[in-house]
Image (tube, rainbow, N blue to C red; front, side, top):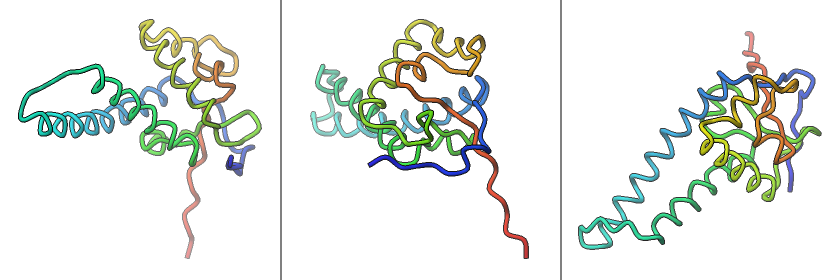
Length: 150
């Protein structure tokens, strides 16, 4: 079930700098997960580093699951939370699984083409990258939470 986000009128499209910051944070988290999986794979193969297609497929699925879980749950990965970013539909809803898959694939293509899909943010009037356009979503900056006074 999709979550409806509040305070949509207090958000604005995210720029490239914030997005890159969140990507770096998420990349560090993913590297830690991949290392853990690598250690487990070596332990299960009696100390041999076997880079089988199965292991690479596992890394791919785990990476997608990481992003899809956070995008569907609250619209924010851990890196996006640190940079106050949220991915949502234009209607202010969390993404569906097919949208997550499309976003993930488009992001991979963007990376493979030397980040061209992310550089696109600089020329798009709505600050959308290829993954935003392909998944019919947007990345917005959310306002700082108000501190309790008193």
